[in-house]
Length: 169
Image 1 (cartoon, rainbow, N blue to C red):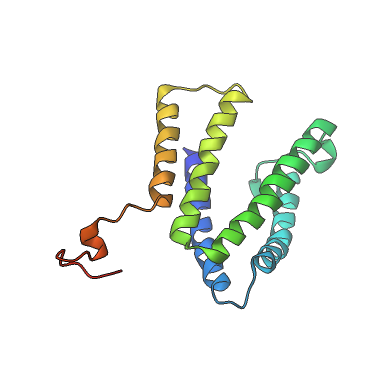
Image 2 (cartoon, rainbow, N blue to C red; image 1 turned 90 degrees about the vertical axis):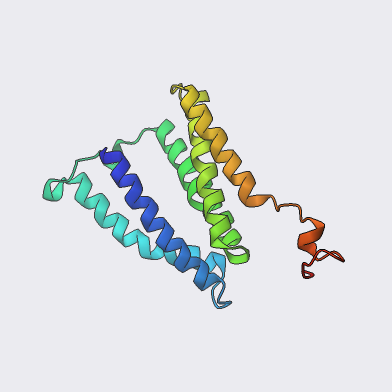
């Protein structure tokens, strides 16, 4: 339950943050790379303080290993997967999408594809269990993304065809 509460908190924070980001990006006064850079620079000192608190177990926080304990294999995973792919490339793509699209479309797509890929790769690469329930959830996620991205076909009545009573679009 603790993981679910923390995940809900993260989702709420990201939802608020991305609405603010999209608003700034659409002002025409901030570009996506500037927004990512500022976000990272602002987050870094807070992350460093959290790291120091956690590695020294201040205030009853869970103690975690220091950076010096990371071995070569895990450095590669963190640098390539988390740093380059998720930390840099995904943020550049996401902020670029926010700069040209609506947050109500971009955010759900990006944040729906991520768990679908995570569940699938967790099963294929990490050997995590795949149940019918998980497979159905992934299928529903993909269906939701399709519903958000595929424009519905307009009927002649909607398009304002003669005699339809509709107005031209």
